[in-house]
Image 1: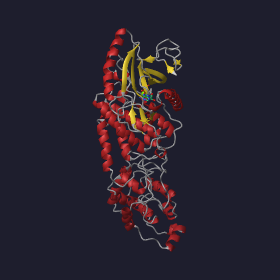
Image 2: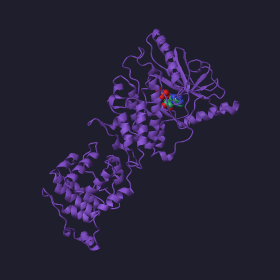
Image 3: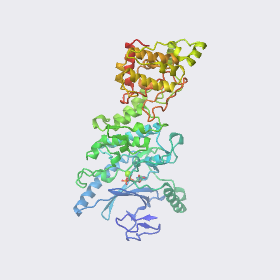
Length: 552
Ligand SMILES: Nc1ncnc2c1ncn2[C@@H]1O[C@H](COP(=O)(O)OP(=O)(O)O)[C@@H](O)[C@H]1O
Ligand SMILES: [Mg+2]
């Protein structure tokens, strides 16, 4: 099929053999060379077509972008055309980057402005998300490491893309991405970027037809799309340097004309001003969309004015603190809190990689505990009760002779009984209950880490004693504190050791093992702490409290 690009043409679809459009009579071939064969998308300022270059024997694909703006008078068109020519020079410069489509031509025809660019064989990250599922952390690192250098490159040339989003990032492909790198396919994406996509099947059909047609004549040259650049397979390419974007700030587009996709736009861009950091923001949101499959607007908690994307992660999704920190800086609503440049963001990533030279995979609930820590902990394990004691503990917990002291009259017998019977989950919940009682708060109030400062020493000692004693030194606050000190108060490492997630999952019990076989220090949980975003705070305060009460 040939496709007529004339604006307003009522029957743009034409048979392959047609020279003139059967609908409007216009010549179908542009510049005696480029033949549009299929519309790819229609945006506010233009249209994009898949096309073929008839002048090259193998008739390779190319992409035609048509700039569509209503001109009030001919003068306006002249100005637009002049700027368009100037801007094409810049686009040409950009296309020298291997991850930006090369500009093949720019021309005016019938008072219409066109650019022709290199066709990228592959699919957009939006399509990849739909087909292969949510992106893993590993894939997100790849996106960041591939896109940040492109942004650095364009920003250095004073160009701001303004529309970074999954539908404008294409992975050059010939190979399907490895299934082990993806999570489940996404069935219900909550947001679809406003781009009409050509279906893969259609694309394949067109490709097959074209190959057949051309193959008869030039059978050996089919795959010889000559691109002088060094092309990497699976490389991500930044597309959609729309002409309109290059013309913003000119009189042609009324001031205040906003270009971009609102969902991914930085707040300042929404207000009509852009900076290079606006692209960084959109890149951060792009990553979050690829991680969660949820429209960026929904990842923001308006009531608390903060991002809450973590709570949308599925139980299978593991995102490290390292990545979280970087993403959160990218999506900071305050420009000054974002990275100053793409280069700075990239350097931070590289630096964090080298400084991460520690044998730790953050966040995964860990079954094993490192030798070193186990050794230190075992030193503190009280002597194993003999068999008779154990039987007694199971059947006659009240005769266990524990000092159940409380400075505020809290009854610890239930906690004692649950722990003696190894009912870890209930004991964990009871711990929350007694902590509230000792702090004179109503049952199961979420506690602020600072509340721990007010916990009477005697009560902390009793709770801790019961946990340590009945877990044979495996669980308890003092055990957790020993691990925390051992890892030099590094919360990420601590979580790794005790098998906790470094974030607050939707279901607080996710990743928790209420078993004696859980890692040392795994219990009691921190489920009773209110989320302040500073999870380590409770360990810090607990450490000071334990030290001041001489509990170790
Ligand atoms: N150079 C290209 N190579 C291959 N496909 C492209 C290219 N440019 C655009 N596309 C496809 O066309 C779609 C729309 O193009 P785009 O440049 O993003 O225009 P729009 O302004 O309509 O978003 C893209 O999402 C992509 O699927
Ligand atoms: Mg686009």
